[in-house]
Length: 268
Length: 297
Image (cartoon, rainbow over all chains, first blue to last red; front, side):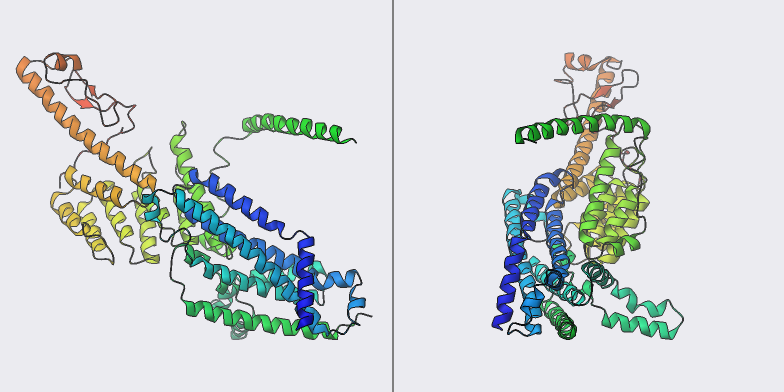
């Protein structure tokens, strides 16, 4: 456990050195500039659009970090040949890999926590300057805490993306890993189509195959409740809990796969 | 290269780039017809757009909403011939990607229905959009009320309008004024009093400034219509007393029928036709054109 922690802290420090946290500045500038500019463009929908933009930006920035840092976690060590000095040390390969994973998740969590704080500050300011009749027309207060549910699920989604990127990076090149991770993320949003595939094909074999793929592919659409929270629609805690259970189980599955591949990989 | 030289080069080149862009802009405008770029939808299928949005459907809906607002505003303000062909597709795409985007349905109800050239003159499309909203949110009384409004204000079908107001009044959380409005609409049709009730309630319950402004303008139009009726009665009194129609407002002021030149609620003087004695809005008034006169029930 201590080894995992040490590796994780090092990954975090490395991401700070790589200026990954600059994304927070980009996020803050984007959000503040938008809040100042879009008022005249949106016919009174500025608070909704700022919420949409903030939640989407948190997700997009996180996704880019998860994919493009995640794919390099193992490959960088191999490319720089530092893996040859690391592996002989009293450290299990699985600890090394899990440490890498936890480090990137730590980076993501800190990143998103700061972005979320900036997001709520901008929303609080908008709430302060909005006239009472405008505030009364909002379906929920600008700083509605329910948005934290959507952000929590974004974090979980990014944890899964990171795990998948790490899995691919244990056996393929960064370019291919990025392609496969992004492809799986996109495919995971079309899951519901696979479920209903049986209705549009005649072959029962194909229909069963599509249905099986539906259950096997990660269902990324399940992590998305951004639209619901912005419109103050109810997102039951039971749904969030079930999605967390699903996400964490899937992450465990992917990480076990990554550990198995990485443990058997021959670096000679 | 020395730092000063580099900075000077960056400044000079930046100015050159901006200047050339301005020239390029003019040159390109001469090559491309003005409306072409704005009047094109790359994605026309709501189903395709919804899938392509992945988990960013709300943000994509916002982009289409902004485009719809800009499209409508641009068309309405343009001096050339106006076509609102893309207004319905843009609002349809917006509400397909984000079915909870309530204001987009209501925007359609007002501006798709509005008579050309102020709007698309397509109340049928406004109703179609609102019915789509009701399919997505069956308990949303505002959509049922808006359908009633389109039947009332644009189609002058007071029986159907009253039925929609009644249905809206029976939905959860509906305000109490809807049921009486349904009864008044059924009994008095498009009377000015019932129109005033409808717009007053829309103004009071508007969830966007543009909707409130729209309702305020409509209420001012109703005030202007009341004013015109009053002044036309004064003109008739003048005629009964003098045997001729007044040639100008001065005749009415001199004879103390009026104290000053009468103006509409925006302050623009009314126009008097000395031949017929009719009173109208100045065409430059923001309240012009007035809605159709009350319809016989």
